[in-house]
Image 1 (spheres, rainbow, N blue to C red):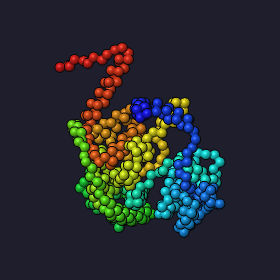
Image 2: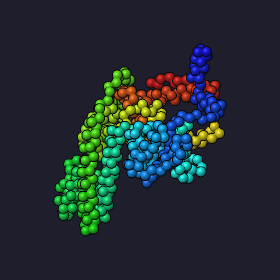
Image 3: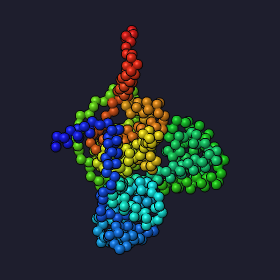
Amino acid sequence: MANNTNGECASRKRLTRKQRKALGRQVSSANPGLEVIHEDAAGIDIGSREHYVAVGPDRDCQPVRSFGCFTMDLRRMAEWLRTCGIKTVVMQSTGVYWIPVYDVLDQHGFDVWLVNARETRNLPGRKSDVQECQWLRKLHTYGLLRKSFRPAAEIRAMRSCWRERAQYVQLAAACVQRMQKALTEMNVQIATVLGDLSGVTGMAILRAIVKGERDGKRLAKFRDPNVKASEETLAQSLEGTWLPEQLAILKRQLSDWDHIQQQMAACDKDLEAMMKDMPAAEVKPQRPAPPPGPKTGKRQRKKASKNQPEFNMAEEQKRLTGVDLTRIDGIQPMTVQTVITEAGLDMSKWLTEHHFVSWIGLAPSNEISGGKVLKRRTRKVKSQLAGALRMAASSLLRSQSYLGAQYRRLRSRLGSPKAITAMAAKIARLIYRMLKYGQEYVDRGEAQYEAKYREQKLRQMMRQAAQQGFALVPLPNRT
């Protein structure tokens, strides 16, 4: 009997992906019944003012109850669920209202499941909160829902601080835009001379203007030696009409910009303290890395982002992860911080790297009908990690590296949007492998990619020629 079982397992492994899917459909059609997976389950419909909770009809004479949103109401909810013998609770991720409910129930020892509302909404007739919580409990009872990912408490704290800092960065950029608009309306064309108004020269000139200086030649004295424009050109751009209402806007926006910088510095201080409190990563044994490819040109220099925190964030990231993720072309310390705060450090939450890419929202969601793929497109998700990886992929356009050559090849064949998404998924897979196995990334070089692509193209041409009854013959070497 054991030999037959081993033979069946071996034959199943040799099946193609299409055959395995067909076998899965046969198995599911042979046993269409539903099995109870979570017997002691409850469902909660989350609201802003009250929450509706449903248990099995055999657990209480009133199986559906409503509770308020105060902490004492949530504790009453937990005590009622405990008296009903509930062990696992399911709820939807509705705004931020689910977070207090999740925390209180988790403190009381319940197995709390947070699920995506997109997977539970396609059913007609569920129009009330009472029916919603009952439907959630029924789906969870039969194991038809998937548990959403929620990082550890220390990662969540760091994520809140990092997201707040990102909002301050956006507010600072808006202040710079308003100051530039006010200067343009006064015909002070400093923005055409300076590439960055928030740089050393730009901020010095703005502060002098706010204090009352109007002479363009004196304002041009604040020019930094690194500015390409001459002092004379800068002085000519600083001649304007000086409207009082626009000067008032300039003063207020500059004050807001200073306040935002102070708030960003406070976030950096808290972020540094959180990272120092976290333990260092376990050092994993290194497997022999492949040799790096030959250098074909100047490697793209990674410039530090202007919005990067003041402390040495890259060293702290390397201590926490155990690897240097910035070795991947296009990855900056700001991108690494987004990876840590959004996905955490434990990659065992995802079974494979493909699950990780799908969770981010970079995997194609195929629409299949009649055995044909109608559309291939990624799911519409709001993921800050996906946006950061897309930004990293778009920076590979001029990178003289293996990833840069691959991106340019995909860009010429698929177009820029699809190539960016494909390379973002590639970078996500590299990050997954580095964090899970602790292996450093080694760039194999642009030349190795071009040689690999040439061999692949040659094999394809030889296969096509053989199908038509021809053979490829190499040309003799020309002197």
